[in-house]
Image (cartoon, rainbow, N blue to C red; front, side):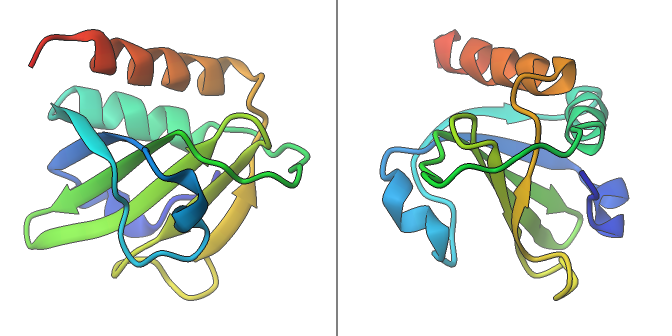
Length: 128
């Protein structure tokens, strides 16, 4: 998956367990339960996984269960909402060029996607 160039300035990732997936098709913000903050070196690892997501065939549901907010030195860069059922990911935010914003497909069964999902689940299991 192609990430905005600003991903290289990321300083913080907030992992979000999405509690109202229907609203994320066109919402301005990613809402849900914040389950973990990720900092270096996790940022580079996670963004590398996202960047390595191969294209897939998107289905219709787009009911995302997980998301991330990526922050840089001056604030929010972009957000991603992942639906591992329909193989769709929504990318949006102030640092995303118009041509990159929107829904993209990914292979949710690929190794990078499965590792990303494992990390999301592990983050949610850690005590706060």
